[in-house]
Amino acid sequence: MMHKSALAVAALLATSVPAAAATWLVTEENTGGIKGAQGSWNVKTEGNKLSGDASMQMGNGSTLTYKFEGESEGANYTVTLSDRTDGKKGCVWKGHPPASGGAQAKGLVGYVECDGDKLIIRASVVE
Image (tube, rainbow, N blue to C red; front, side, top):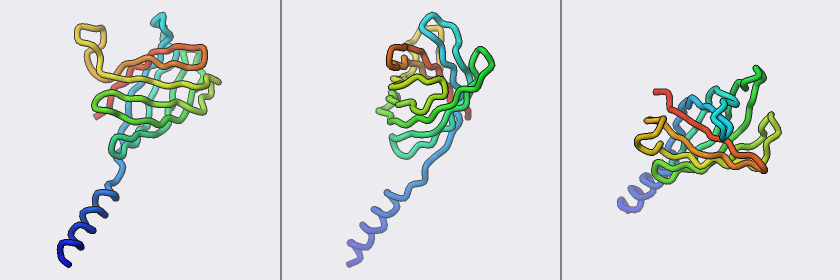
């Protein structure tokens, strides 16, 4: 009897782990290296799942917002960006640690494939 209740408590604790929150500083660039927008992602994580919203300022001064959700596999991320106020649709970011010897040494970097568009997102976690 005691063994079953201990397992039930362990299962309850494992499923009730609170989500963690963090802010990521993010820059979106076109593939030519020109900054398109910069700002922050408010990221909520639960296990290997993440979700949140972005608040960015575009190079022309307008605001860009969107929602995102995805998952991590180790240090690699696959994140879907939705409800973008710039109208881009079908956007998926494949983020990963930067290659050694590249221009970026920390954080995450990766391409975003949108319907007919390709961007680069660079992100760093604010600690």
